[in-house]
Length: 345
Image 1 (cartoon, rainbow, N blue to C red):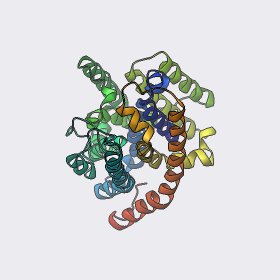
Image 2: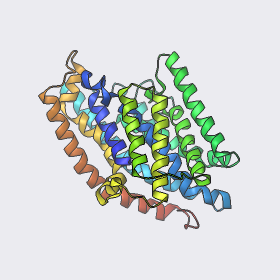
Image 3: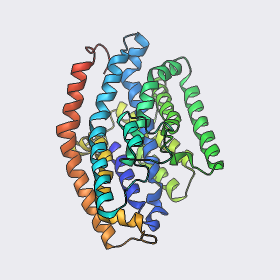
Image 4: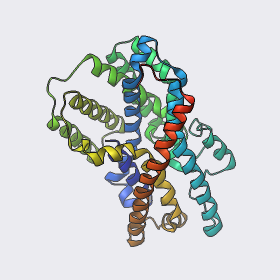
């Protein structure tokens, strides 16, 4: 699922350069980030909730592992994006992200660029979500303790209500909640807490009727919701249902097409895919010129060629990055700085 969620965001970023696509179905794929936020809360709760309950949870180990998970690829793509900005400014006189600045470069190094410090996104635009993730990681032990003291249904109700209210509030302000990037630290919280509550709910309750049909039915509902232009808050709640049903199927030993060797591998490599795609996209002259010239956001042959080139480069180098940087760096940092593993996974 992670691979398809990452790919949907890649497609969305490409559609930003073509009005007809952006105003169609692919233009709704920006909510794929919210899928990751929910999944993140769900998986972390699965991995660490027992340790928190039993008092064996190590904050140091947790934070080291989280840092090792995201930082090596983040810093690589940040450097590449900065070099791309320098190149495009030199050659075409225009940068890809108007928010690029020395100040934003500094906050990006610290992974705090999406904490409300900037008016516009900068350097490797998708990295705002990594900044938001880091914010959620810092809060996770406290949120988990809070959630354990309450019924799972209460946690889910509170998070879902907060999501709906925030969507309504920002809609009134004229800034859709699910479009927040520089304030991503706000956007992630209800999604992340929903993921925590979802896991705790699944630990207490189980679906009597599961199966591939149910999973594909929920996925089908998602696409119908996209086509019907259903509000983003509902889309996000459907994401939660997809995650829950998939987890239930896995718990009942029901395998699906997404559990094959290749889907699993690209699910693991989806982070590198997500972080690298914009670097290659902004390195191509076509999208840069499309952003510069008025009326150029049309679906034409140069755009299509640029998509294929960028996608091919992204897939190839995300595989290389995952194999030779992401996994080795994560392992090295964890072994060097984390405490010996006890009961955590």
